[in-house]
Length: 290
Image (cartoon, rainbow, N blue to C red; front, top):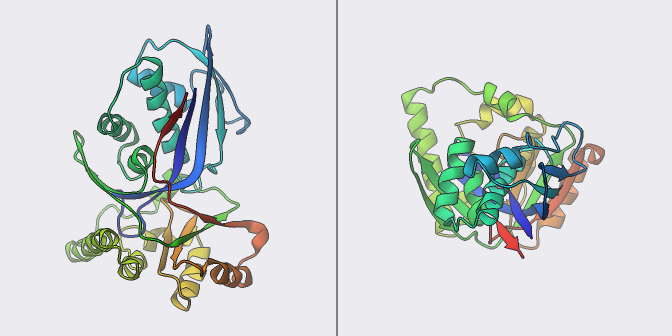
């Protein structure tokens, strides 16, 4: 059995902690024979546990405490601590692992409930489970969500060679916002969602560029964001935004224009320090091969 979970990009600018997009880079979990203890084969680095303390296993055991140990293999195309949902993908995979091994037959909604309670908010785990574009809200008890297709476009990811821990990025945020500023920020998030559902990427891209929830405070941690923003303003692109907590930046651009945008990026950025690639929307979410 193999479990596949897509990468995700949260926020898309003003959709802070509530909007997310599934992307076609994947975490794969291969499940082999039962064993006396949990063993995970991987080449993700010495900092990633290979036994019962791995997030994959702790999540599975949170779902089913007496789950029988197995030998597993973990392979990931999702870079760690780059704002592409690497930890959320492991949480979703752990829930699916328990679901399959214990034959729980969880619904997508039940998986979302469990994943959101573990993660704390639904912006990454929801699209990892469902695919596509998700807007969701969590009141500490229940998740409500809307799923929508993404209008045809090309997505460029600018992935720096440095890591940015979510805790550090969260630490840059203010403890509170002025009421009027919060109303303005909220209106832009609302309009982002409405524009995506109406397939108006021109308006959605405009709102992506006008976030006031988090990007102004995180910009100092991701200096290339200002460079990319200026480039986008003078190009055919719809808009750009930090992916999750950063440092990855996503650009949404019309079909057939990504080559031109990437050429301009090559003029502005030291390509040795970045991976600049095209990504596609994953429309399936978590998937199990048997």
